Amino acid sequence: MKAVRVIPHPDGGRIEIQDIARPKVGPGQVLVRVRASGLNRGEITQAAEKRSGDPLTVGVEFAGEVAEVGSAVTGWREGDRVMGHGRESQAQYVLADPLAIMAVPSTVSWSEAATFPNAFVTAHDAVITNGQLRPGESILVNGASGGVAWAALQIASLWQANPVMAMSRSAEKLARLAEFGVDVGIDSSRESQVEKVMSATGKRGVDVVIDLVGAPVFEANMQSMAVGGRYVNIARLGGRTAQIDLEQLWLKRLKLIGVTFRTRSEQERLQCIQACARDMLPFLKDDRIRWAIDRSFALDDIHTAHAYMMQAQHFGKIVLTID
Image 1 (tube, rainbow, N blue to C red):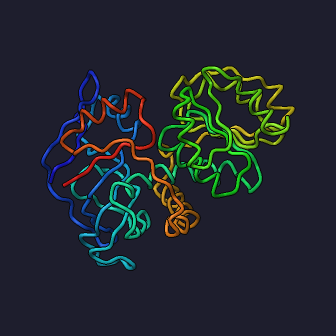
Image 2 (image 1 turned 90 degrees about the vertical axis):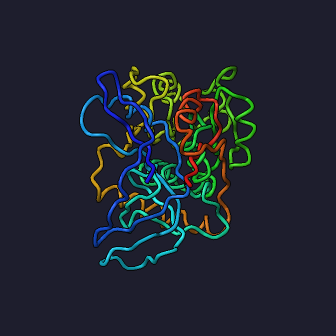
Image 3 (image 1 turned 30 degrees about the horizontal axis):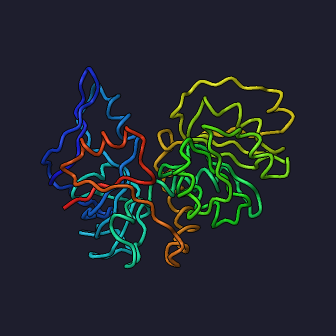
């Protein structure tokens, strides 16, 4: 089968399309024929960091049909339409834990389904599990045009947050975010984040911040927060080192939280997937999820897809289609 592989190299890992053996199903596993896989920036950066070890198949999310079910698996059958969060998914076949896959309604395309698992599981863990967002509370998402941000904004809107605020340097992208539940857009290239947040919240400040930018927005985020606010950092695309005003942390009784799957156990990862499925699949079945697919690429065009992603001009998700 074809697979996207990272080949270790002293100067940084290199991406290749290789033919490898189709994986064999264990008793407690499900084999999925992959039809589409979401592309994520972390896959590119981690590949570049791989300087030694064995080659690896990349990818963390997929959608397709169940091709084979292990002897100890119940609840899934061959032919079931599924999407999942799991490793080595940018290939024609992927092995998955039964708890890591979710049913795909017939109304949802393969490309749409492939954008759900990583973005929504990550966003749900940040917004609901760690951010502890409650209906009526306010939320701000920095760097709001990528896949995880798009999912976080939808989750907040479906959770009846008020207001839902998004920040971006692109006025065009902010305008498009209105259809995903954004009440207040903040153009960081020409507006003061703190002033806009305080105006939108009656000078109270924001209850939950979901930060994908890091250092450049850290100080403004702290100043924008309400007493008892929760600051959740997912990514550091703008820089990872920031200076903290402990007086604000102390006076506002803030919680600073970092979230990642890199240091989670397999059990913790599966718990995150199941929590997202419990809360978000009803909205998916009711057709209340809005999709944002910027562009699709064939598997063989993986280098073009990576180059496009690194331009950071996309809105929503980039998808690989797999024949």
